[in-house]
Image 1 (tube, rainbow over the protein chains, first blue to last red):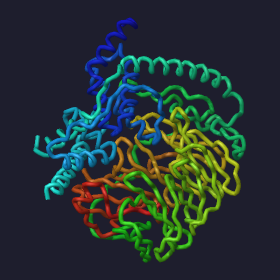
Image 2: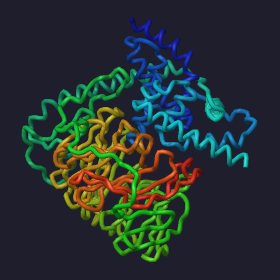
Image 3: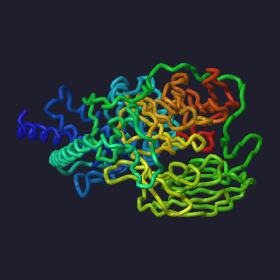
Image 4: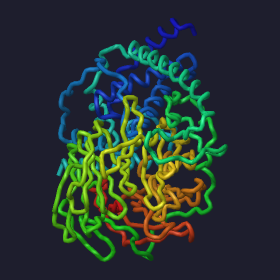
Length: 164
Length: 431
């Protein structure tokens, strides 16, 4: 693919999917600025490989973001490669019917260990199957089941507390 | 999908709606990749220069100008795997992983940490047949042999350690991230308190190193009296461990790469030691577990055993294994399978001398452990498994020489609330 075609193709894809992946990144990182960094870094890597990606670009982008985010976790400290950009807006959405339960659950999800959180997000935000989630995270289906089971157990406790 | 799953899904989507993409990520990403390409080209040129320079007798890992002398390298001298090529003192080649990236480290590592173990055991719950070989906290009480010390904190406990004067060091953190350490005397009375974003305690508990939020490292004695301080200028600086009067600490550069430096705590002199960070030091054997700067690759994680006296890596190992601790005598290292993620109960024990895998410890499916370490007898590791249903926790020990595991503490219940918040009643001491 010629460079100009490659850029046009890539740009069209990113513009169509950036909102979704920014939100996915926000759930993974829990922080708007980290989400912006993560998406930009992942898209840059995807652009490098754009001409050789076969199959769904979404799966490729998702996998790259998961790898990148794990890389940040492994290193403990993250290099801030992107500075001064302003590609996102952040606002509190309208309160749901049961705001307190929602906040409790959201806080709980954010406090989960990184891999458990990623498993939950892939299963219930990205709507991947357990097998697909296991493949993306490089773990067994049993571990995915274990992660989701723990989160659902937590949800039950949280809901019980809020309604008590 | 169950009602709970629907609630989870709804909450995630509602949370995600807080953020929106309003700029052009395509333009930003293309620009970023071009900057990266320029950097790769620069590094490639630097690497070519380095290739010519390796013929000179320079200790590859010794970045410090006043570090201990290193032995002459031989044809079997330790070779840094590709991810940590920055150990040569030159800019590293790019190692950015992508899903399609199947590249392996260039120079062969000296050991494969995925090799078959000599011993494979499985943790099983059962009657108590041993005694805890390491100090621990249970429900707010510090247990050290027959000694009991009630801790003055009930929430936010992050770590505990034995102090040389019989006291206890208690590390806590608030939800806002404010970390504090308290020095308790032998009766549990607080005698000193200080900020501690990062913390390292030496083996006998006579020295505590802690960083504050501005990157100043302070050395304290067991009474909590400050003995010396060093301004690192890096708010991310963290102490790694101590070897005699030398404190090793890690800093991070603008590219996110870690470097380990040494500080002679009797004065102010510091020196660069090696790229990467030390997971743990063993003072008796003068060794450290070195984690190189490596992008995430759960199937090919590398570590090195660093000789503190020689200032060089003895050997590298690569695979799914990422050791975090030494056994008591420093002859082995223990840690989880990286591919299993944090909290894994699938452990490995490897020789610290050559990286050979000596034992694997598997937990029943679904069970896991929040902590582990080498302790007690020379070849034992101690883990605190949590039952499959998160309802019980205990302490277990496994021995390489016997190839068996024992349950060392009567299982204690974990409430559903604590389980949900990943708060568990047992915490192992740092030393």
